[in-house]
Amino acid sequence: MANESDTQHAPGTTATKSGDDHTTQMSPADHAQHPAADHQKKEMHTSTEAHGGAHNDVGFPPFNAETFAPQLIWLALTFTVLYLILSRIALPRIGEIIEEREDRIQRDLETAERLKSETENALNAYEKALADARSNASEIAKETREKLSGEVDIERKRVDAEINAKVADAETRIAETQQKALASVNEIAGDVAKSLVSKLTGTDVSADEIQAALKAASANS
Amino acid sequence: MASGGGHSPIEQFVIKEYVPLEAFGFNASFTNSSLYMVIAVSLITGFLILSTKGRALVPTRMQSISEIFYEFVASTVKDNVGPQGMQFFPLVFTLFIFVFVLNLLGMIPIPGITFTVTSHIAVTAALALLVIGIVIFYGLYKHGLGFFKIFVPSDVPPWLLPLLVPIEIISFISRPISLSVRLFANMLAGHIALKIFAGFIGVLLGAGAWAILAPLPLALTVALTALEVLVAVLQAYVFAVLTCIYLNDAVHGAH
Image (cartoon, rainbow over all chains, first blue to last red; front, side):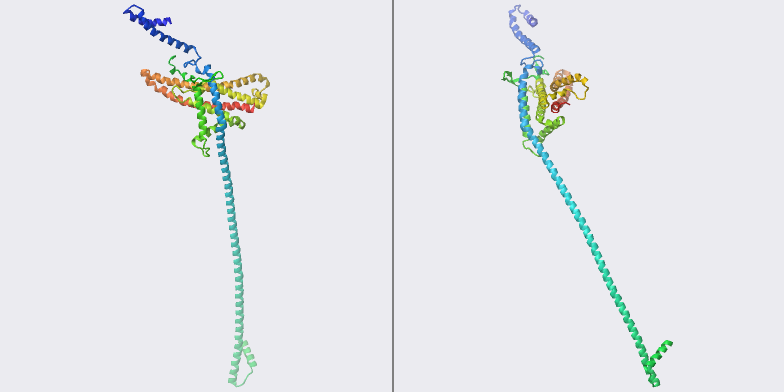
């Protein structure tokens, strides 16, 4: 302290030396300097030495044990409040929202699965029906074809038979007619021969003689 | 330095009393630390409750942020403790979100006010002791004295036990210490480094020709800020994960 005030004194002393050598003139300056130095010293002192106390520039704040109590009390208070609000209100609510969404998605997926299987069933039924219809149609077509071809065969046979019968009939009739014609040729030839003989000779010959003669003639020729 | 406290890198950690209070003979003053804790609690509860007010099936942006936090912590708990651990989910969520928001609030610079609650060992130690306390009490409640088997590793020859058991006990005791010191030291060191490098900018600007170098610490401060945001998030996550790992011992007993 003495040392410091001495150095502070020095300029003042030299300044006043030029005028008056009296020390009483220095006292206002001395007083003005002294409290300032004193205050500075005191501040320096507290800041380097004291680690406690509510000063703004003390040692290392996190290790200042005096601040532990208010920190811990407020920590306990705020943390408890936060825990209670979160565990009672906020977290159950978010949990419910997420669960509800998962349920909904699950439900929707199940519905989609069900609809898909229904669609597949319907598709299968349709395809089966289509295949059935196809096989039915081909069955019917085959049956119809067979039936028609059978009918056609029968008809053809009938017609064939009819034709054959008619042909045979016609042939017999032709043969009969031929025979008749041939027979009448003999008769006509006999008649002609009889009338010729009677005209030429004037004698009647019996039909039997003429016939025998004709036969003999036709046999000779 | 002594009188001009505004430039000291540790000045930001000073606890300032705003409203002097006393409870049960203790100093319960409302300080800047209290203010930040109250702000954090208000922000967290306000956000989580307001954002989920609509209970929308298709979430709004805010609601999906809340849901992301929820599912993130829930999966952390399930992965580390298993389904039985979900009874501790509200605790782990509260710890995580509280530390997370306090860490990040400390990154928002408000001159003369900004304060990082988690940069104080008293707070982090209290949270760590809460976790370890729950681990011990729940472990004893669930397994009785068998809980102490966690100090006896299985599949170890008996003659090694006198060596291993003390090691296990020491490692168990060091858990709350490491849990609290990790968070506290990370936040403290990061904020000190930020303040020092940011201080260099001012010093260089005031040093004549050296001012030309001022952009260097500025760039470094920007980079450090990004890193600190990462650390703030990461430390909250680490705190939550370690809480889960310690709870796993309490739930499942000896490993």
